Each structure stands twice: as structure tokens, then as C-alpha cells.
Image 1: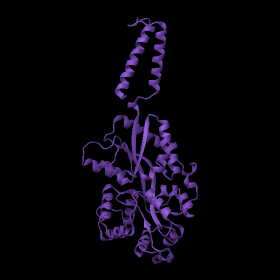
Image 2: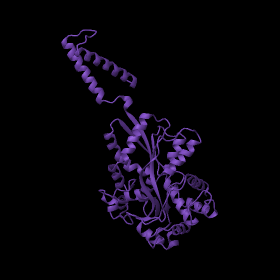
Image 3: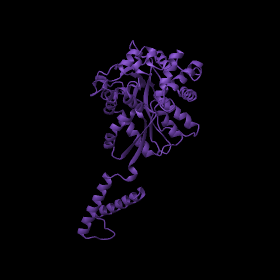
Image 4: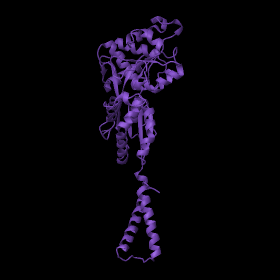
Length: 398
């Protein structure tokens, strides 16, 4: 039975109830009933009314599709059941894609569903989505202003013995990383010859935000200033992109996939990587179990803080879905849910939450290299045009 049929049934039951009410008040019914009939009719209407009160009509149930970057997969999955218990009329469907794939799949309508909420790794990705959609239509892309959900930053990780050779002063160094890639093996940078080839891993910059941030900071270390779409087009930067692309075989499409592969492959196949602090903290215990020793975390200086930002899209999204999506974003912003994100290694959007006060916080587990308050300079993510240029340079590099 569709929504219109249920509505008509409801209205007819209301009319019956009104007639019975008139009879109780002394007005005659159109068709007389005996006392027994009136009693059981009243009971039936009462049961139907209660059922309609506490059983939502199909039209009032909403399904919202939330497309998030893979970095949020673990915490959002953990929060799904709680949200649906709090809001039984809302069915939450979670989908996870690389941040660039979120944009590409939405603009090109490659999904087999209509997204309601998109949560890429940062709001610059949303700016890029707006730019591309504006070239197609003049309709607004989002229902409301995008909302920050949680924060993290780009960090380096390395297996301890590798890191102590590559970064002898304990500080991540892009120049040392580049020298190792140029040498191609550990003996070329003072490492044990038995370690074999030097293997750096990062995500695909055309599909993942962490790969884009990696190449942004690496370019900045050479330029001595923040990259722009103009200054990226220098021979040294083009050579850097070519070196990195040649050195990395089939870079993963997402940061979570990268880190799981990094842990599974271990030293000799994956030595150093750039990932988000959040996922590095969360999967640290897995590295301890799988490899028998954990990786070391290195804070980059400068680093880029990335704020996972949510937006409710407009295309094929009605008022009911929009209202349901707003409830979901309010739910994520509540302190209880922000604490869940902390347990998964994220820094809360509300900086008043004490990282070390949250039960089972990774910042209390003595993870090598972890800092509650890093001293690194934090810069904003690159603007949309810089991201486009980084994608272009990567695609053309050979």
C-alpha cells in the first residue's frame, strides 16, 4: 500500500472516529448501531488510531545515502546503529569512496544511488564539487552551508629501524625521502644492503586527498613557499612528480587501503608512507599484531590540517531527506559522537574536548611519536585550482 492509500485510510478512520464522537455527545448517527456494535467499533477505531500514532506511515520513513571518504569508514560504521536507534524512522545507508571519487562519481552520476550527504576529507574538495556542478547547472549544489565534522592532519610513518636511518634526527625530511627514492635502495642512504629496495607508498593523487596533500607539501619543500597553479609548473617540480610516480607501483585509491597494505606488506615491501594521523593512530595496534612491532609516527613540519566537512546536496534530494540529513549532522556534532571519533584517532571539530580524557583514547597509549599538541606549523589545504594542477601534473608525469 503506497503513501496515498495509507493517507486515505487514515482520513476515513478519522471520519469514523468523528462520527462516534458525535454520538457520544448526543448527536444521532446516520445508521443506528446497538450498544455492542458501537462498543466494538469504538475499540477498533481506538486500536487503529494508536497504530497510526506509533507506526510511521511509509512516506514518513526516510532513507539517506551518506557518501564519505574512506578515512571515516570505521567511526561512521560504529555510529550507524546508534543513530538508527535514536531515529527509527531514518534508514542510514553508508557509502565510502576516495575523496576525489566522491566528486567525480557525483558530477558524472556514476553512483547507482542518489547521495544525500557527502563528506570528503576537506571543504576544498567541496569547493571543487561546486565548481564542476556550476559548469553544468545554475541550481544551488548544497541545501545549507557545509559543516565541519572532525579534523586530522597528514603525518609520515616508518618502521622503526628504517625511520632511524632515513630520519636520523627524528624529524621527517622531504629531501632525505627524495634522495632515497633517487638511490632506489637502502644502501644508497646508509641503510642495510639486505633491506633491498627503498619503498615509499602514498595514495593516488587523482583519487585521494592524502596523495594530493603529500605532493603539495613535497612541492612546497622545494619551492620554499606554498604551491600555486603557476609556480607548480617548474622543471624541478615536474621532475619531482615524475620521480615519485615512477617509484610507486599502482598507488592505492584511498588512505585506509594504503595503510592496511602497508601493515600487511611490512618492511622490505613498504618502508615509509604518508597517511592521516587519525588512521595511523587507529591502526597502530594492528601493526603491532601483524608485524610484531609497530610503526613510528612522524609529524610533518609544516603539515596540512584537513577537516572532514559534510554537505547536504540538492540534486534529487527532497525536503524529507534534507530534514533527516540535518538530524544526522546534528547527531555527529554531539559530544558523545565526537568522543567516538576521538577513539578512532580524529581530533574533534569542537576543540574543547580533551583528547586524553576520552576513554580508550589513542593519545593515552604511548604510540611512538604521538603528540597531543604537535609543534608543527599547520597550513590550510590547497585551493581547488591547486588540487586540479596537482592532478594534471601527476597524470602527465612519466
